[in-house]
Image 1 (cartoon, helix red, strand yellow):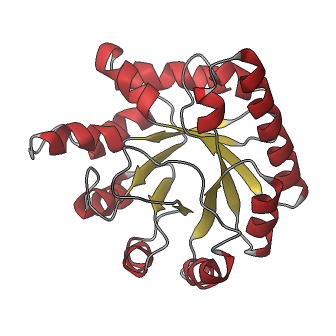
Image 2 (cartoon, helix red, strand yellow):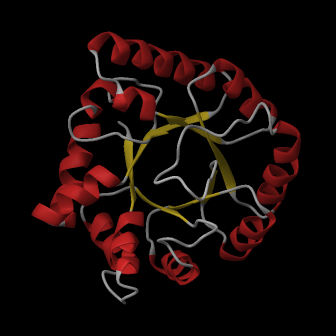
Length: 237
């Protein structure tokens, strides 16, 4: 049965739109856990456009399940992670001008520079996940880096406009998940997964955890956080 990790970034997006004190992603995370979430995900971006340092620090003290900190592989972020000590760090690509993370981290190109980052995080007792496209060469690179997990970027699958294109991307995800499991890497998946397309992915037995944010936050506006999370938990499992 797959687990559900809920990304609460967009609660902070609403807060930062007015530079206000609410809504608080810390409270949203607690409600998500009440709804059955198996983990909480936040992305601390270099430009601090939504999640703030304070949020990560308080979440570390309040999350009862598992805290997954998404971040770029920079010295600043590594030091923050070493101080906060989330359960998992997911290394992602990051560009200032993007609306959301666009594509997976090119671990093949940056493999040498990632060796130190992954080693430092492991030295601090933090598990490491790499957010990557469903490509065998990236899976093999993640294995060489001794990554504990990969998170397969499902955005291209989710954005497919034809059945044939979605089927093609689905098969790439299946192949990547099987290879990762064969190499002893835990498999997570996320980006663009929603209440409709999750039906495609939940049958991939190698996927241990789904990381979902925007779709749950959008539904939570209408039906409340606990219900939105509970409905997704039922779907992924």
